[in-house]
Image: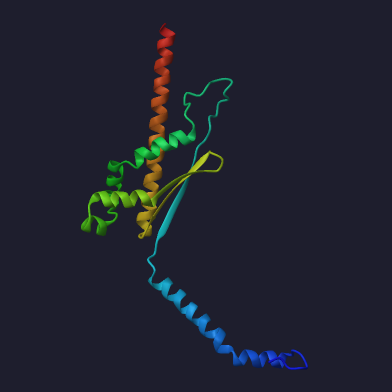
Length: 177
């Protein structure tokens, strides 16, 4: 009960001392639960890389681009190629990913889990995209992310070369006509 003289520091101090356990017990319980969660929660590591897409260096007025597909279309095509079952199986076998899943279930389950742990998103005004992967072993996560990024770069180069070769063949035919 508040004294008639009003609140003063001694009253507040005495009230806090009397009610100390009402505040302390929930605080320590929450603190204990958080500490236990930090100790026993599975550790998940995430590696992410950003791949920058450089636009054409020669101005479009002088030389028209031989690659006419925009970044989103190329990215979708390459993502489908990289997330194909054969590619994912190869990466799983190369890095010995999900050994417990492969031991108790099938390779299809491991491929499905692996595909869910890969993230690909366009970022930064359509001139960059990022590739991320999550897992429990930090070294494997780093290496798998680098492998996936390298696959994106290699497949993009192959796609651009094929389109440029097709354009060259078309121009040669037109020139011969």
